[in-house]
Amino acid sequence: MSLAKVAGTLMVAVGVLLALNAFPLSTVIYPQYFWYELYPGGTSSEPTAVPPGKDVTLVAKLVYYDATAGISLPLPTLWEVRAVVEAGDYRVEVQLELKDFYATTIDSHSCAVSVWEGVWSVPIADGVTYSITWVVYFEDYGSTLQRTTYARATVSAPDGYFRINGQVATATSVIVVDSPRLTLEFIPTDNADRIGSVYVEVFRDGKRVEVVELVRSGTVFTAMYTLPGYGKYTLKGYVKWSGGTLERMSVLLSLDAERDIGIGGGTPTTTPNPTSAVKEADEGRPPLTFAQLAGVGLAALGLVLLTRRRV
Image (cartoon, rainbow, N blue to C red; front, side):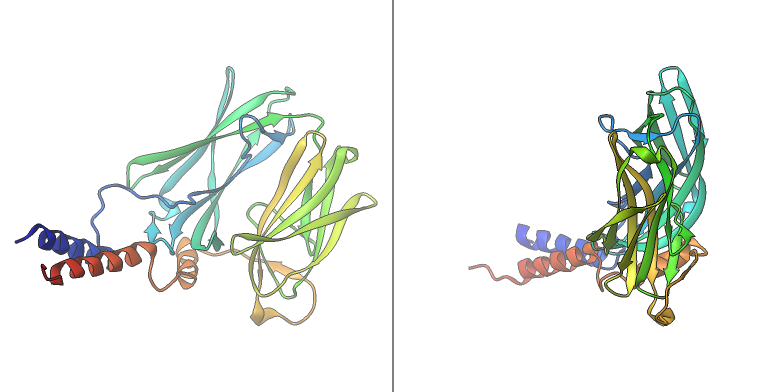
């Protein structure tokens, strides 16, 4: 058998396995967007500002299924997630709890996301920079992934919370609304006089579609915004001050066509289990995953080599 036919046979075999999602992989493949969102998520040069002497909710949003790429991890109920916070001789480990699951689109990838939370009591000392090492242990694989972000205790930083249609928007909120008209609010709780501006970024299918500036009205900041259509959105809220920009909201919002009755309002809801989010992510994926498309192409090239006549 010629070298071309041997290569063609191998290419067809590997291509068929890929197309059928049956390729035996000894190496674990993690989703490209596994570390979807971390809070605090600052860098060593630009740490996230946190208030000293107060409790801060650590949030990790981690992708466990990418339907578009055909990559799946064990269900998050089998994971262990913790955050190790350190600064000099100070070290504390925070165990994160699994709070929620939802499906969303990230850079055109239909993904299922798990949401983890834990409370860190920030020491009272001002001006200290902390490293936060996020550690995820996969029992099924016996393997660990980790990433490090940074936070800085800043006593003068402003603080507060966002509301959407009167609902407090936390990191784990999934809000369903029955009208595209939204009332956005930010309520300051600390150092309101230091706030320069407040704005909300609106994302649809992983792409930013709008930046909404909130206007100070008495003691709060408000704005009205109309969503451009039905579907799922991510709304991120930011507060600008002299020390930088603080993220104070990251929420999934859904405008449901079946519930549209033309009035304002909204009801918070959550996805009940991880398999529901997987099913929803599957509904948004293309007919073939990237791996399957590669398999089809590889098999076709192999067939060309096998059927080509030598000149």
